[in-house]
Length: 168
Image 1 (cartoon, one colour):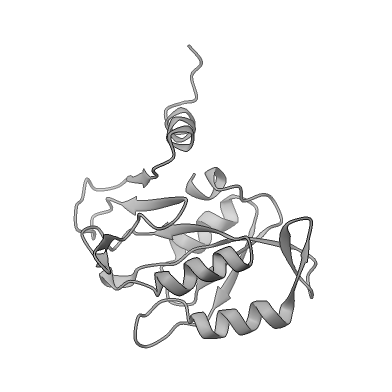
Image 2 (image 1 turned 90 degrees about the horizontal axis):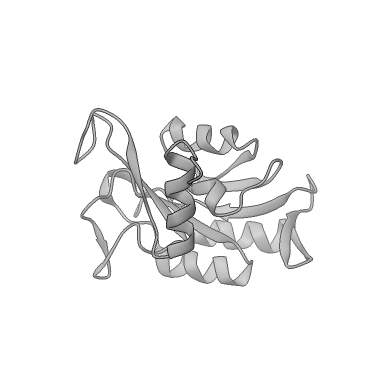
């Protein structure tokens, strides 16, 4: 749902770290988009921003306000940092890359509830973030999760889509 709220469309490529749980890539596939894996760093266990920057510079082109993969011709729409075991990706650098390449950030904050990056809660850097309440998480209900956003319209749309999409 978080990916759809952020504008992922069928055929888009979504940038993910190589170190993640399969659910992150599955969410991309459920949107009929293509997971596009990016190397990670040993320091953060998250996306290697240096390699991502070089990759985007060499392998993408800008058209109509979006970036496209030169090899596949597909639009690259989203960066999904995954904060593994509460370790933050380099959010300063990812935010800079997202601005430079007009990419939205959707955080996978499933394992980072309560973790901070430079004093700011993980899950508050992107357009939206996803939390998990699965049995192995910090807060658990046995399953399910939550969507975080500070955008009232996105929150309203998320509530509508996740609550049987009933019309009044």
